[in-house]
Image (cartoon, rainbow, N blue to C red; front, top):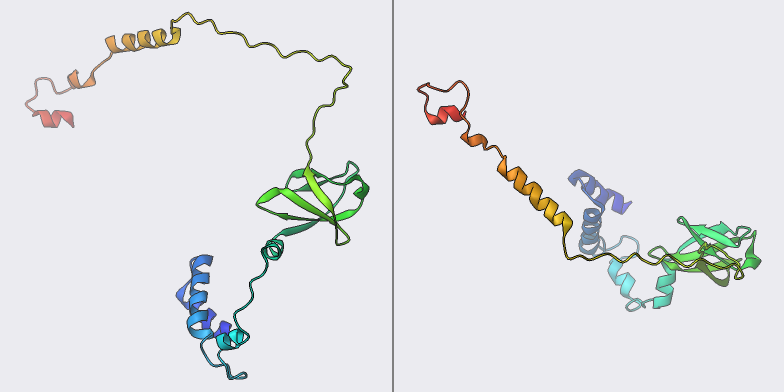
Length: 194
């Protein structure tokens, strides 16, 4: 209620243009106003009450990383695959037909952990569909690249130069043409240009 009455009322009156601006203003207000006032019930400032047990202990990096991972539940298909964000991943075939939880970092879809009933059952690996050919079937060799015949003559450069020369010889310079209707008039040159 205190935030609604004291901060949000002011923020709405000011007009907030972005979430970044809202976050910056709220952080400033919380540090300068809300955390420094004496609370009516505890008779302490909120910042003093928060720090009375000493500085907060920082979480372990693994715990922090796990806290920000995404989690989705997917049913494993008959081909032992699951789909996340339009990507297909292979999982353990014993999980076919079961619902599994997939935990992952949305910025790195290469490492996806698979959980069944809260227990880790391995990793999901990117599923690549390839073409299967029996080893006994002889494979045709790819065609050899055709060696370019290098005559030392740049044919296209010659054609482009000839086109440029032909264009240059027959070009019309519109600045040199007399303007119609102004021949023999006593108008000065500035009026002819208009």
